Length: 294
Image (cartoon, rainbow, N blue to C red; front, side):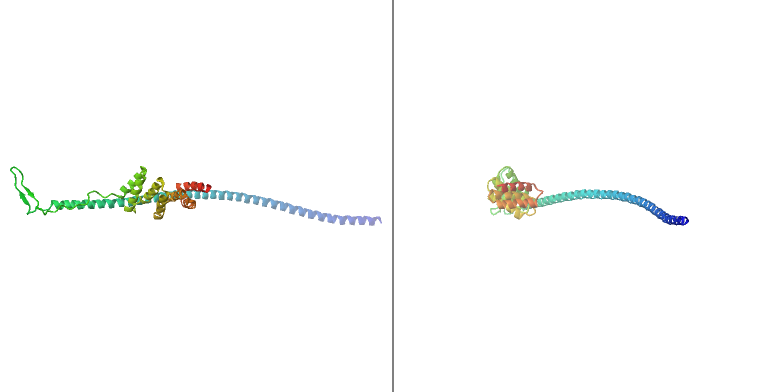
């Protein structure tokens, strides 16, 4: 019996030892797997750190390139602005040159007309100097010691009239006179001279300014209705003039003086919208606030 018990105990011990050994092998395998996973995690972490560093380097390079591009665009913007200003300056000089050429062309016309008059006079004088002596002329008796002389016949014709010997006035003569009268506060004379200049030389580059002078003269004379008509004429007749911004503003002033606020408001708004860079736009904005406040 005792031997049986001892045998059973040995069998139980053996049976218990087998699972324990198996359990140790499983644990060891798990530990090995965990160790491998840990090493793999370390390798992945190293790889991730390398990728992060590479991304940082790439981002820095992209930022540097973006900054270079931004600077390039900024420099190009500055260069384009300078080119635009140069083109604007060239355009202004070209317009000024065209105005001067137009003015000189009209001046040359007056000079040619004057030379034609002078040439006609010179031809008349030459023809008179080259006329042979009239054989029918009566010889006056020679006084002792005096030179012989002849008397033309009663039917001899008088030399033709040249109609004046001076060169015709040029456009600048009329326009400068009109501007001079205005500067001297002789507004009636300025209106008359400017009107005459516009009638004689309507295509002169100074014509828009002369029309403006007429309107300004009427304003100084207290004739706002006539001034309004003068400014409106400038606006309708001289579409490409550099006087238009001031003309619209002064048109609004004339409307306001005549109590036509809505028309004045439209004139001011037109200046502000179409000529925002002009001084007239600033004045129009101030005037618009004033009539809106009223």
